[in-house]
Length: 114
Length: 108
Image (cartoon, chains in turn yellow, orange):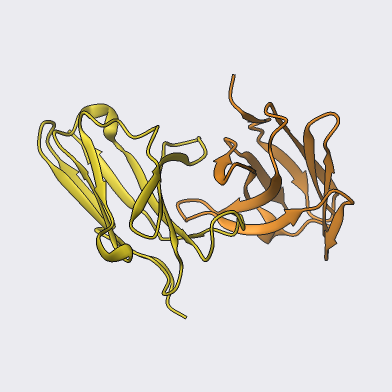
């Protein structure tokens, strides 16, 4: 079974530039998460999808961050414009069914904003 | 105050030792609990679920105390390969919340 696939693995941009991350979850997993992880911290939830519906986006900074999960499969997270403080690892995870607690993570997209 | 609190460590113990971590959670509505493991510069992976009656998986034992709102992880006969960050995770209303992690380093 293929795991969660994320791209790009690494991205370096100047502040105020836009950036987008892509995630393809495990086939058949209905629930998809985007987390942000800073060094020395645990993952912090940005948004959770159940199929194509964003059911929890309360912690997504909506002035600059947006996400979509068209057709309830793969997902894109966008930041526009990026700020220095956005430098972090952006992790995508999928779960077969909401509430099991068994999340499968991708390798993450490491963003550096200069 | 964070909803899930952990001692960041690092815990530095010799191979073969027994080590235990605790984690506390603040919201009594939390429903289910887990330990994840994260190797350096890798993604988190589920280590084990934590059940009310306590559960064991080989050298790993997890305990839950709902009254005191804490979770523990015990590792017996530690191996060099156990070196990692251990993340305490809580499910509250389908929101999966991670602690900041406890770093463990096993020395030969």
